[in-house]
Length: 364
Image 1 (cartoon, rainbow, N blue to C red):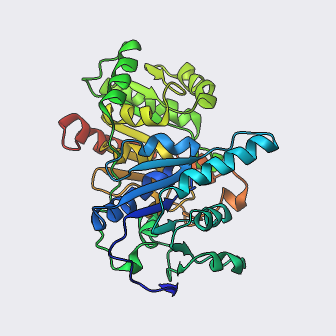
Image 2: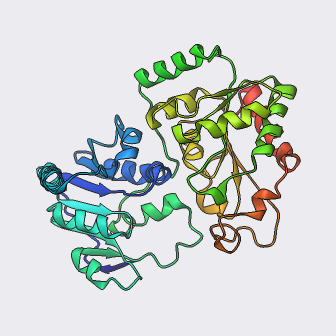
């Protein structure tokens, strides 16, 4: 699995850098890797570099000493130069023994180089950028990751070094302050947080992962009619108007909380909820990581790779011979017929079974 470097890390490893410049869901799925590093090097200081939008996910994590985030704010040339100098000065002050770049992008490779880490571990990239491998002192090349869960893919970067790997289930720790904010938000909407609430997340950055809005209406009305469960719709500020459009068509009561929380506060909101129903996006991973049962609605992406790990999580996916095709919609068209043709009636049985656990408390 190692194509460059020794499989031994120094026993006196004290300062570790992990670079994860993926999306929000990728950050959640990296948590088992961070936990494993912390457990194998209990006296170490673990610093993580993330995109700015993901910083709230790991702040307060028991496995991470510090979160450093990359800002994409527009600056003029002098401002950008000053920002870069300050950023790398902040990074290098840790005197890293080891850095792990979990992805194959060029930005992570340059961060590894400029971090000053003595040992720099990166992934092999088969896109022809051979210069990238020269940056790293150690290069990991997992033989076959196509069907491995995304959590395992990130674990693979640290696996060659003989580390003990514990649970593969991500775990997000939510602070009391954020829980109190989430409770206050629900009470402001007239909801009783002590009673079961179902959180619905219909949106994704990728349109080919989204289910039809009329099917969400059918689902929300069913929850209101058959279970009398309050429904909250979560999403970003940009998705708030789309959430309102769904609610306008509903006969049952639903509450529009899209854009009302930070990503860290979303974790608290989903922790309070009795069930999270979501397409393949960050809310699904966050819900599972805070211990809430989930029902994931998948289209062309393989659930075996991206669905939450654990017995309290279920997946529904259209039974079609081409599913999962792993494409960005049919023929990369951004339109997924497997989701367009997935009717609410086809997921009702899985929903009922999941809600049974919520109602009885068996899934908590």
